[in-house]
Length: 165
Image 1: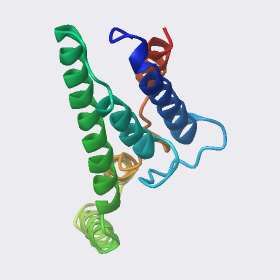
Image 2: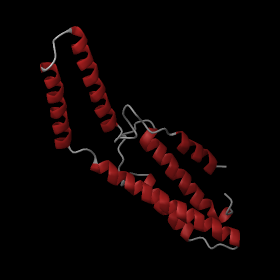
Image 3: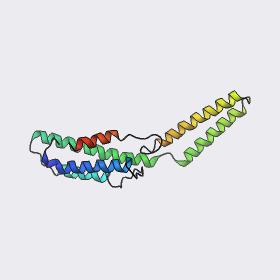
Image 4: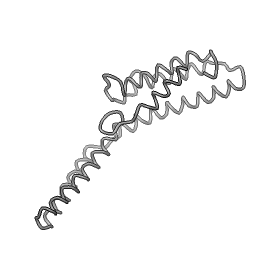
């Protein structure tokens, strides 16, 4: 916007990229899949960067704005790929299986070593429920766009409103 009408194509492509990301992750029919090859985010930022590199700044202010825009675009592309690398890492199934087995054995042992009364059974149940909930939330936070705990789309929607001004 501050660069001038020469950057209009890059602005339009940036807006389309943000709209595609909103639709892919928070819109109707969303899959929640963070796929780097999906339409939208990754291809969009590279296209925007290409448009920005094609610009020829006329003033010192335009040079600064162009350098800043390219830096931010690079940061977005880097964060995008890091998100997918992290998403693929995840918790391995054997780790979760061993953790669950260990926790079951731990609480089973607590039950064997205590007197069997309602207070003790209630406390063991509440503690096991608390640990199970913590493990559930940790695993659920690996999928930031769907599940019990989700990333808000508010900041991206605010950015979309600013791009069109």
